[in-house]
Image (cartoon, rainbow, N blue to C red; front, side, top):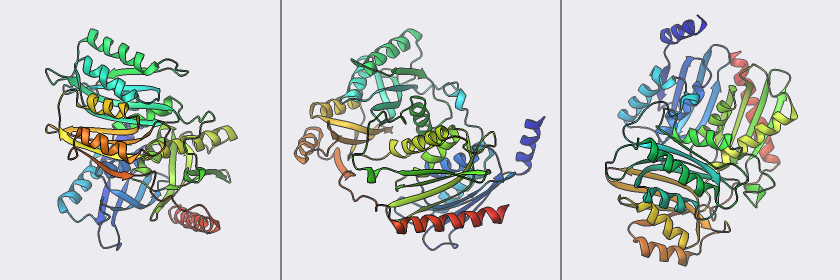
Length: 436
């Protein structure tokens, strides 16, 4: 009865969205009011992220039964959203009750797909791993149509969508699926894997691929550093603090280098850890992002022990670091064909490139793949090697986009940083009082 009553309340009070281009000089302001429900913040942020919008500021309040959020957003060029079709689409997505449906976290892979088969991979990262995975898939007559690969703390995770290379459809034969699973598991294990390598074959569900990667790596406990430092320069690492105020909330503050989808990664992790954000604010500068959230566990309690506090810090640091664009960004644009990804990653491996992250996209017969690479020691790649690879693949097909290793680092924390931190906190307390 409680669940039915909650559904009735949500139907009677659908989300209300206001998109305003006059309230702020630098950004489009999107205000969302809705009946409150665990996970709704993630759904809103995911809609904005899926539209490739950059969230420059945000104010969050969801105490009680109502959810009230304000987001300042710009497009990828840093401009306001002026296109009426885009604005109408954002409003429809946010106001649609379907957008706020439960995430089906425990039901990933239940919904069938005729288009492709989803493969989820986890194992120890090593140079050439993606090349070996792609070679196995090609030998098994699987064509990779879309994929995303992350690495963090010597662990690797991937969500790969494949089709049969002759029919272009999903692979359904149980015996063939079993062979794919077995051979990929052998590749992931390598010679020595202290942690279990896993290969899961399932049709895709409604959970986004990026959220699945967070969930896969979280389940793999990649946040446990085990004495390994992903960043040699500690000033480049995110700074996360977790403090309790009285007995009502736990305050989580994060300062890190700004990047796309940062808020999504943090909210995704807090949601999957079953914490509820009651109040919060986000502010981004030229290079740095500051985020502060007042949270409690779904059971209504704040963080209650040092061990839990340390785990929250580790998991949020991992969430920020997983998608950090480490290395040289290479973009491949060419006609798609069976075995293309296997050939490209083989060339990278033969030239001692290590793939830190990759996004594979195929649309309309065209492949648009992005790779973030370093040398095998994690250092910048020799420009001569890159020139050689570009000539081998084709100068018009493979291009260098950006080198994040050589990009300026965010300003280090100073006394002034703490002053701004206290200012943000004061504004957040004011926000809390105004809605209490």
